[in-house]
Image (cartoon, rainbow, N blue to C red; front, top):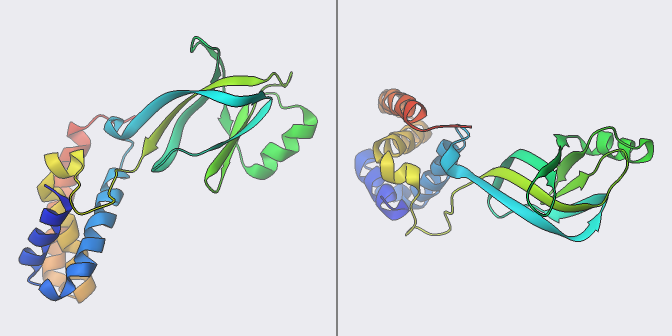
Length: 193
């Protein structure tokens, strides 16, 4: 099912063609929310990054459609782990710079993330990152694995949101119940990290 087909179906089921733009917006946000319900392995990306300018502290741009990190590790040129980095807050991270950190760490700020190596402040040459990403939803002609495999769950969630928005409590409650039943199926069927 494509986003355009999802939008058309929700318009038909809710009987609200006057809300087409709103329903399309609800469809896209609903798909993102459903993908964020769990850390689905199908939304996970693994990559080794060669650091452009090796240094004990490196700042890199977050990947497109980034949602959250699972792992950040410093590795050698063969991909062998040297150290796993711990998530940190910017203030804790910056406080460690002068104290020589005991463990490698990273923090995110805006669309970048910064990684610092260990106590010896060895230069970072390669990073291995595992992260979850949002699906590509730039136009109405796209779909996602969730929308393809579980269209009824997505339709019910969109119906719930539209009915809630227009104050149709009875149909909103019915759609919510159907959505929750379908979501349980997804969480059982799909492996998560």
